[in-house]
Image (cartoon, rainbow, N blue to C red):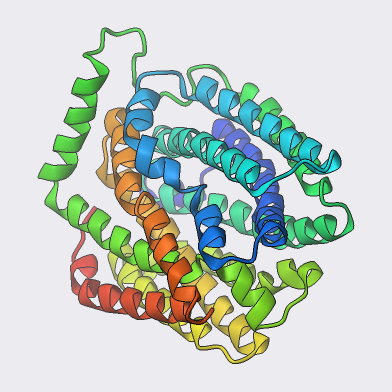
Amino acid sequence: MNSANEDKSSLGATFNKLWSAAMFSKFADGLTGAAIPLLAATLTRDPVLISIQSNLMLLPWLLFAIPLGALVDRINRRVSMLLVQLTRVLIGAAIAQLLITGTMTLWALMLLTFIFGISEVVYDTATQSSIPSLLKGSQLERGNSRLQIADTVMQSFVGVPLGAILYAAFQFAPFAGISVLYLVAIFLVSSISREALQGDIDLKAKRPALSHEIKEGLRYLWEHKVLLRLVITTGAVGFFYAMGQATLVLFVLDRLHVSEVNYGFVMLPLALGSLAGAFASPRMSKRMGRSTALSIALPMASVSLLVAGLAQNVYWYLLASLVHGFFIAQWNILLMSTYHSMIPNEIFGRIHGTRRTLVWGLMPIAGLIGGFLAKIDLAVPMIAGGIGAVVIAASQSKFIRSIRS
């Protein structure tokens, strides 16, 4: 199939089912994305505790991403996705029950958030590992763009504002809602045939020990110098992003003086920018090349984070968020398309887990630093994080432009 026909071809029934499941999952993620920070802010106003809570979703990437990534390469991806979605249903029901009975504590919320994060490691790894089996060539940008659009529309446009409104009305409501939404996602994933997400991987073939496969994945990443440098660059920028956004809920509520019910609406410009960036990324990649588009997106996203931290009022912050959303969406889509082009399907889970350990695993540490910086002033984490991200992005721009998948 030539590239012109590939651009216009359907992405396939299996991808469409996976995408539909992502729609409902991201809707649920949006509800929790608003409700969990707001719930945490009612349980404590301590910036350090808030930063710890806000990063507990990411901590499992540091602790478990490599072994879980290797495990996903060995087991049926569809089955693993169903199991973790069921776990999320139970987590939502548990938080709702604790709120209804008046027994919710910060420590219970932290524990359930951490378990939620573990399920996210498995689900994200299984989903991303499936993409190279379903999409080829220029379809990667289109597919990743659609997934980003689902993320933006259902999570940021629908889930986050609705989550804040529901939380303000009935604290338990958004958490009961996520259980229902994840049940719908379970139904959609279960409609995918058992082997459809595996590609050419033979699960019945005799495999070496799990530890050997982990070492094999680590060795591949270490020896692939371009991939390794890209992962390190992304990890360094992500570290400063996490530092900057660790106490975002307090920055919005206490510095910009936004009410809880309006918290979700303050997130809308970020979503609007992300949606525009998701639609634009395939065209930008085709017009100027994937690497060139990447080299522009990362510095611009970093600068806009710094500008947001310097915001003196909510309108300034909204404009900076709009720009940040546009470029960070482009970065995410084109980066994943680059990874899908560079990493063999049979070891994708291990490499994905390893890189996420380096990138997302460091974020809880950065978040804790951001929490301590917020004790100085709630704007300091975003300013410091923005400066650090700008320096890294600018210094690596030439390298990113030189990447050939």
